Structures are given as structure tokens and as C-alpha cells.
Image (cartoon, rainbow, N blue to C red; front, top):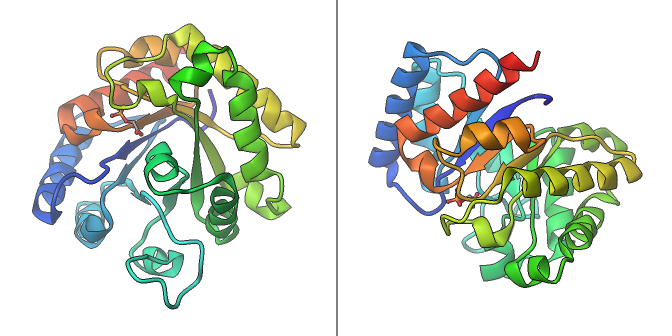
Length: 257
Ligand code: PGA
């Protein structure tokens, strides 16, 4: 396991008051039981970023502020969009790129994922590149090839200097928000395949798993999933559960060193 990290993706949940509350609750837990090794980040909705950033700074929480998406362009006539410079001004340190909900519901294709990845990683922020197959692909046994293609499409043209800032999150669509978690062995197999695709591209990146991760399954996944961390949706909306997931990874990392 390298650079262990857990990121909470709050999706379109929590207004800024609720977001402040959750961040403070998380801060209390992190102070009470600090983590030794794991980097923790939260990805609130855009409109909560300023408030969450204030709490992180004021309480010195050491959390990485993440964004869930960003526009590919620098600035200009893009009604409803948010630029990377705006996020940087707010102290955002990492951005999710190509989350399956962006790909599936908002038409983000491989080419747009690649351009967005280049924008984020090229500017010096951590880019959390999300990949993963749907159930039909998995049932046909095509998951490794499908994800390898997603990786190649996103990464092949990335500048040398930007590469170190990419983290890959393997998130099978059939496990996202469904309560159906992938078996640790399935995660391990896919993560090994991701690593070998990356190696073929001259790459090495931390690989996270996401999809119905909970405090209950995090230890097994951390131990047997050949992963470097988690991208957590639903369970990141509850401070206790999210903190327990971070601790499970932290304990697992400590025990393997
Ligand atoms: P989930 O979401 O943990 O609610 O399954 C994960 C994600 O979409 O990042």
C-alpha cells in the first residue's frame, strides 16, 4: 500500500450549514483518535467549499479539500460551470475527474475526461481519475479490458510532469450506491490489472476502491483488496462511519509496515 488515502464524495448532499456541521464532527473524531498514515479528503458540493474550507483552516484539521468536478476550460462563457482557478482560490487540493455519474448522467466521454485530467494534474492539483465497468461488462467478463481502455484514453496524452499527481479510483458501477460491495478478491484482481495497464503506460499511481464501502467492510477490503485507499460516497455523510473507514485503512497500513 502506498500513500494511503480516503476521500469522501458527498455528491449533491448537504447544504453549507450541514456541511460545516459534518466537517466539525469529523474534526472532533480526528482529534480524539488521530490517524497516523492516511490522508483524508472531503469533496463537498461547490457551494459548500468556502464554508468547509474555513472550518478546515480555523480548526487546523489537515483535511484535503476536494471538488467533485471542474470545467475543462480556463474561463469564459460557460454558464453554470466552475473553473479550476476558482477552486484553487478556495484551497481545493484535489478534484474528482470522470466520476461515473458525470460520465453516465452528464455526457462526460473519454475525450472530455482526458482533457479535464490534463487541466487538473497539469495545474498541480491531485486528480482522482474514476474508472469502472457496469454490470453488463462485468457479466460478460470484459471488466479488465474495459477499464484498461478507460485508463489509456484518459492518461495516454498526459504530460510527463503531470503524471505524479494522478490517483486512480476503481469504482464498478454495479457497486456504487447499491449496497452491493465488490468482493476483496474482485477488487484485488481489478486493481492488479489497473497497475499493469499503468505500468504499460510508464505510470505508477495510487489505486483506490469505491462502491458501497462501509465501516463494516473496510477492513476486509483494505487487507485483501490490493488497494491504496477508498473513495467513499454514502458512508462519508456520517462522521462516525467515515472516520471508522479511515481508521480501518490506517490500522491496516500500520500492520503491514
Ligand atoms: P457509494 O459511492 O460509496 O455511495 O457507493 C461511491 C462513489 O460514487 O464515489
